[in-house]
Image (cartoon, rainbow, N blue to C red; front, side):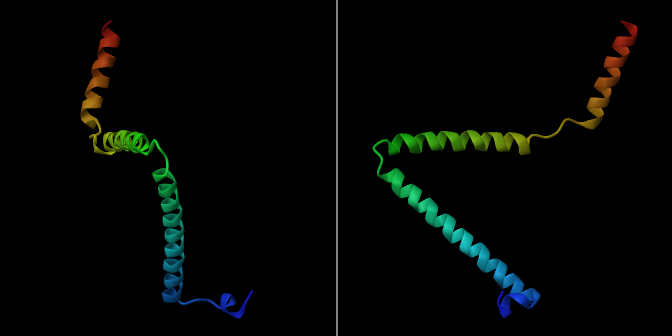
Length: 92
C-alpha cells in the first residue's frame, strides 16, 4: 500500500473519490454500450432487432406501470369480503 491509501480521507475527499469512481464506471459502461451499438449497426437484420427491442421495452414498461401504478385493494373492502365469506360459510 502507498502512503496515500493508508491515510484516512476527509469526507470531502472521500466524496470526490466516490464520484470519480462512479464516473469511471459510467464511462466504461457507455463505451461498452457504444461497442454493442456499432456491432448492431453492421448487422443486416438491425431493423428487426430494433423493432424487437422496442416491443420488449414496451412490454417491460407495461409491467412496471402495472406493478407500481395499480392501487392496492382497499383494506376495509377486504375485511368486509372476508366477513361475508365467513358468514356464508357458517350459514351454509
